[in-house]
Amino acid sequence: MTRPLVKHMAISAILLGSFAVIGAGLVAWIHQQTAPTITANEQAALLRNLHSLVPPEKHDNKLTRDTIQVRDEALLGTPKPVTVYRARKEEEPVTAILNVIAPDGYGGPINLLVAIRYNGELAGVRVINHRETPGLGDAIEADRSDWIHSFEGKSLDNPDPAGWKVEKDSGEFDQFTGATVTPRAVVKAVHNALKYYQQHREQLFRPTDNPTTDEST
Image (cartoon, rainbow, N blue to C red; front, side):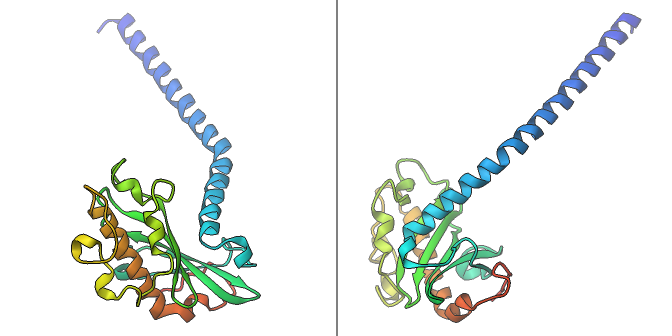
């Protein structure tokens, strides 16, 4: 290998290394600059979803601060801790909003907010993250169809256990044309969240000195 060629390769390596360092530094700088904005936007979107389920006039506490972490893979859809937002008014429990997972969606796990009033009735359900097929499975989104609103007012007794399925499975919930898997997964997850709530209602609303403590149940 000739000396000019070695020199050329060394210069190229130095240049490439420099570009890599500069590129990594630029990415880190951009992340540092945008991270607060991204976090603020995520918090604002979360609060909008929470308030769509429990309007501000229905509670007088800060939903994003009055939270606990709970675990139950079988009923909450994940082995990881699940956040529960507690709505209260004059220190009385109003609604628990469980951030649960429907693990068996068509495109993967579906992240849900399931709001359950103190009496066990559903205040509503919202989808906050999913990878379902556009034009089919994404009808679970509140801004794409009214389907997700069909849970409002439902409970473990309304409908009865046999009714907590999609119509194709002899249940009471509509399915989407060409996309039965998605609504089936959501119906199952919401039903399981109601079961969890029934078993742990008093624990979910129990005041804690540290509201974000993990209370595995």
